[in-house]
Image (cartoon, rainbow, N blue to C red; front, top):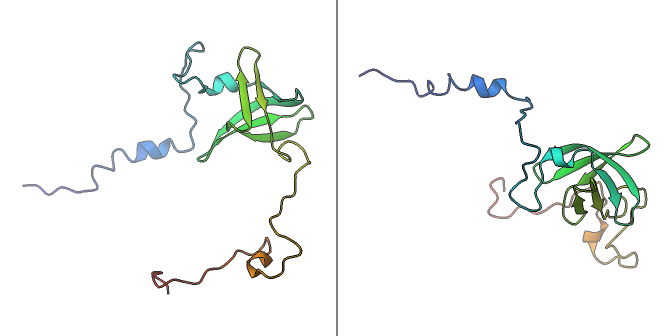
Length: 151
């Protein structure tokens, strides 16, 4: 009986996937084909949509869609040429109107402007709780428990 190498199964196929690393793959999709779910869209349907706020304020035009692990982002080019990133989540992108070629957003303060709200749970009159004295540059530490491996 001949001896076999356990790595032999990987060597012929491993270079092929590695060769495709950082390669953009493009699939031909019929422009008339729609996704199965009502609130799903192909990227080509969303590209170049005008983005407006629920009040009708022009934000810009979708020029790119970034697919990240936690959520998708619309990269929107503003009329002045700057870019803003809009998370493609239901609480912010409240409507996609393909017939009108627009995406309607309800952005939280500070997302598309400099009007961010400063919200603090720290009460200036309370100096009794030391957990509130942690500055934004310091992470709170924890005591190792008996179950920690490094303890």
